[in-house]
Image 1 (cartoon, rainbow, N blue to C red):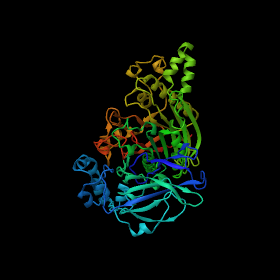
Image 2: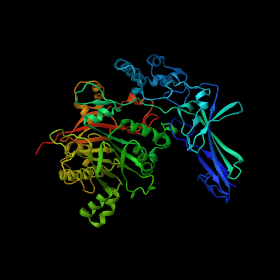
Image 3: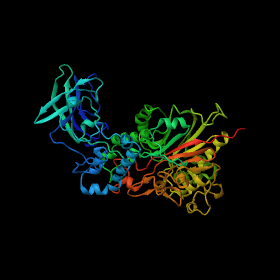
Image 4: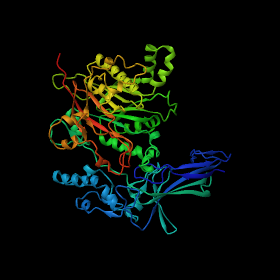
Length: 602
């Protein structure tokens, strides 16, 4: 007979909005073991599995810490209450927690005061929705509305809510499928999953059921929102949720973000991050909320696993109006599972752009061509071992559906070329890194020569400001005496005078260093490195903090209108690094708003 051997969850800490899918191990009648589902429509030997989820109500009210949501709160900030900040953000688990978080926490007070001065009803916009009830206080009893509504979580059909009394506890049924997504009503309560074998003919339960209990449901951590800072002399800050502003002005926004592939997000690498915050079911929802919240017209993501692109990001962003393009890394070096290999994904809003052409760059193929052209056969194998790193670039040509050219050029096509790459190479192989960046730029030069087209070069270049790859991108050449050129065993960088390009590329975030006096500008300049005109960091772990990510643009055809504000150490809180419960990657997202320069009439 069909029997359940074991049920468990990857993480026993449930978070609001993050789907829970238990692992159910079964033994079939033939004694084989499987994790496949057995539904009523396809029973095995006359039996199927039935699932139920319960919320266990208790008489004790529970509040959770806003900094460490898996901990119970023991104190509350009265300043938050007076400032009418969402109450859930006011709770802390200990005096030390409150003290350590103060530099970040006081930003909430400052923004609340600013919101009241500008518009007394802006709290929702500034802080986002923490709890749909708006109170953040856990209601431990069953409300009349909760006990009378129909439930749809995890079920295709409506069914009446049921309440069961057992052992002095009240179990409120909340779901009837294998998966369940906790809601705000579940915060502070334990969930129970039940799996039983049912006779397909009599519909009666056969044998004992298998159950598991979770920890108390916690709210999804909500970092302070990042805002657009104008760099063109305007004295007001933009809001990312303003479709009217973006659409009517003829500008467009571009996001670049290394989202940290799930295969790299291990507790061994990020021991300081809670295991539940590293789990993919949590991270994917948190990343999606962040990405969608930026409302970018073009989204360039790196370290997107092949299976996550197909099963999650492409369909989910499609719901928000994005068309998706993807280039998976090659696997000559890693020889990994094809489904978990990561790559570069580029999305664009269908109402703002249309797809014209796509170019896929495989640096492994370029390495093959290079070795065949310049090296004798005896040296090719060793050369390829050094050059082949499976990295790729995705280049997309888009056509704007909005007019940037004004009345002088009515109906003129506005094309845009967007390159998205991740140059993931060990620091000891500086020559290979420079060669890959140079190869990409030479390919973009060919596209530029064939069409009058603005260009954007986005990605994680794994190169700090001042490095040779950064100099090549930002300056168009590399000083022959640059220390990164000292190691070149394959002579692929010689003559060093060839390390140049003609694209007028400028780093978008260097605009912060050049802007004048204005609201928020001085604060952003303090988050910049004055010696390089780049952010102090875009990547922050316990082992490394620095800038690796960039958005470059052709300055002869594009101007920067505004930039997404940078994070500082206060924003990350001093007791953590990235990833964290608030930010689900070890990189931060970069976003720039551009306007196409009018082209001269011919």
